[in-house]
Length: 530
Ligand code: ACM
Ligand code: ZN
Picture 1 (spheres, rainbow, N blue to C red):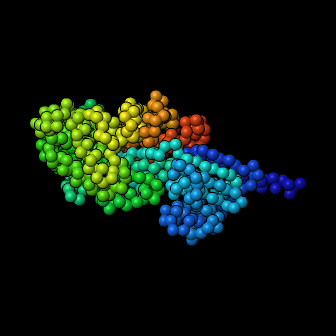
Picture 2: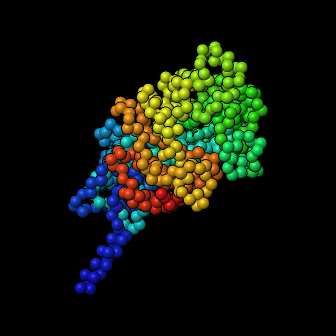
Picture 3: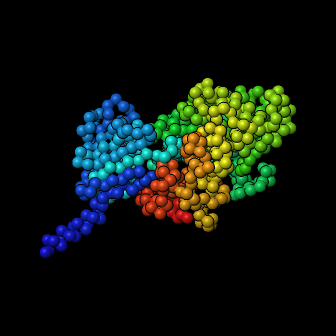
């Protein structure tokens, strides 16, 4: 009897410290079939991970698996390790993965190397919060993302974030199955991209001597603002950016760089005032908002400048898509600029919106020579899209819908579902100062990137969805993380799951476990949600 009690106590204890994992992670796998036999595999130190020979990406995947699961990397081998990484999954989706756990061990198969990486991440999240012995029930677990473009944007112009944080940010994206990092590198308030042929940009246009204190809603005259006395400075050298590109690539994340044109250019104008319609002088902006001063579209030097900048941008970033911005570019200066008006006359353009399209077409041709494709915010539709432009729809879904109907590729990032600079709780007093708006977790989760009134053919042009972090009011990495998490988890399921597989209540249960992982990894996050 005594023995039985001890044994019962021991079983209860082992239930607590040896809980079996359930593979219910974020994003939820498409299939989780637990073997009815009740058998399981115990993960233990000293187990090995193997990968196919001659494949450097798979070797790196094996290193990730070793790091996350506590394994030892074996020399390339033929499926003789405890955990075997393989590339033989049959699927049209390169990011698809399957994990089988059975008496032979663990096999993670991918339709490509990225699929294997996502399988590793799923297993990593499954076990990360386990203490004591980790028991993996025999199972088949598989996943495949709904969209090929799963993006997150970070604005490093309004505030500069060091390379060490950019790498951490990329790690966070990888944990959530994100595969595009849209890097906003320049704006009115700071230029962060080193251009070797134009050194003034990094040296001077990256320096904002002071910043408006608090909000400057409706303030269009910088002279009326109250400023702090804290300079905001910093830029990324090309060497650093190349290093970040490689770091992201190992995690199957493509970096899409953005140099915003022809608006959001005051930082550049501050060092090259002849590129503005009025000739300046201009100062790196210390207030927020939309500036009337933009690049002069009638000055041939403007295109010369842009091609120099974008030439170096293409040298650093191998991404097929290159973001030219195009948003919030008032045309008021162009209306009264003799050079811009003469250009319109020369080209027979009806209005200033078409003048913006003229620049876009020039940039599209320039990028095409380098094998790249232009993507721009939805304002680029206004004067007519250039032939192969992709569109990032931010002012709602309408721009994206119009572009898809014209058979242009679209990334959906409407403010109402995707602007993570908005407050996440109704009570603003319990959150750091933000830009405004209200985007709770539940609203992110409810996003449907494909408008229902598109035909099946048009819907094919929706590449995916993206959340955006504009950083006017995010001064520190901690604040960026707080705004990103846990809303990125909701976005991740928007990007990965078919609509019928989404379930907000069940997502919240999975999120509880993911939050434990955030703590473990030292990520800041908003612990309340609505
Ligand atoms: C944007 O938020 N101006 C794209
Ligand atoms: Zn002009």
